[in-house]
Length: 242
Image 1 (cartoon, rainbow, N blue to C red):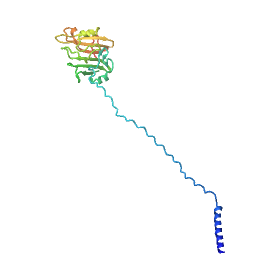
Image 2: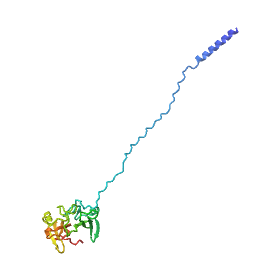
Image 3: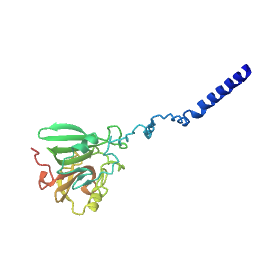
Image 4: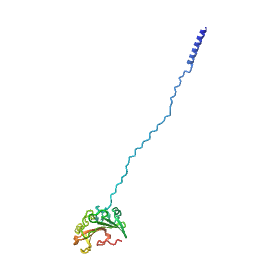
């Protein structure tokens, strides 16, 4: 009897346990929600600036030397002046660049240049003088000190556009300028002096001093002068400047 009661109790307990399982909440457990994180935007990398090209030091051009510019410069005497030194115009910049020295003299400024300023022209030296009043060139004068011996004709010395230079004869002068006239004659073989030859043109004159010959045709050129026509008289002499 006791065994029967025990068996019944075991069976009842088993049924009770089964009922709990079957009769309980059979809904499926919710799936776990996935863990989400706020989207984090990754900033775009900053643009790398283009490299600055390497620039070397700026090399300034070396200015051409202007020392002794009238020597072997290609400048030529004409009735308009001497190279870039133009009659009636301001030549201050040209004269300064060519290293002329300035010597004020009353109302006129005189500018001087000598071939002995560092480079002599052969066995003889010659000089240039420019007379400028205000901003206007009055005359340009080139001379060589050679009245007793005929100067050498040396390349690079003052000359005209027709080739007349120190040492050219009056015969050369007449051939180069058929219209030239003798306007003064003080030459005496015993005492010296000079003869003057003038070529007149519109706006300017060319004046040549000659000396040394046994007669005028055998003289040689010792100076060349280009001057404004309004600064000369009919004989080619320079009138008072002031």
